[in-house]
Amino acid sequence: MLEFLTQAAAHAGGFGGPADMWGAIVNDFSNITEPAAFAAFLQVLMIDLVLAGDNAIVVGALAAGLPAEQRKKVILIGVLAALVLRIAFALVVTQLMQIVGLIFVGGLLLTWVAWKMWRELRHAGQSHGSPEIEGDEQSGLKPAKSFAGAAWAVAVADVSMSLDNVLAVAGAAREHPGILIVGLIFAVALMGVAANIIAKYIERYRWIAYIGLAVIVYVAVKMIYEGWVDPGVGIGTLFG
Image 1: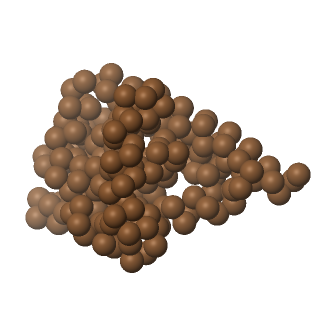
Image 2: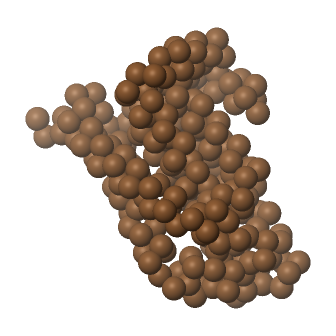
Image 3: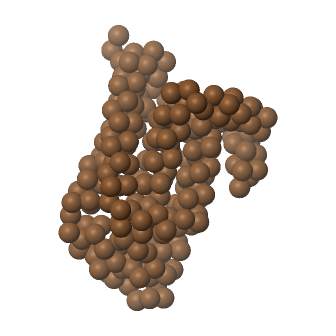
């Protein structure tokens, strides 16, 4: 996976070539004991863990009302779509972050993500959950009534959550490209192999989700502030 991402990113021109990416990773992790780098790394890990689990919970809840065979297909579609979308957004995130105003908008999107997570954590679920996903019973989401409806709802949710995940990681590690690269790879890996496991532990130990929520709120506020004052891409430049 690392080789695929590095080659694809080099082709897209987002992070430079594999040598540049490896150099950034080595540089950041050789200085990981510095407070700023270590804090960025912890933020990225928590964001990836919580949002991967949240993605799995949403997919499971939306598919819960379907017969077993259709439910399994929708969950598989949801996981694969999230995997592909995270890779796609990861490859263009550095270009996206250079668009004036996008950091600010990303911060607003993360604020909305935090609000939804807060409601989910305090809401008695309307879905009985899918047996394949543990922890999706308290999502606060109504299950879809048809295969097409569930597949569409899952696709829309995946686009939003994948973009949120990538923007959150980029916002947390914007000044540490090596940590940013590792965080994006980690986000893809978690969604591919461990999202259901994470969802189970988030449901069992709710404090994990609350810590993740606090981190997302912090990153959202930071992105809104930087998205306004940054001399290169801040929207404040449009008014000054």
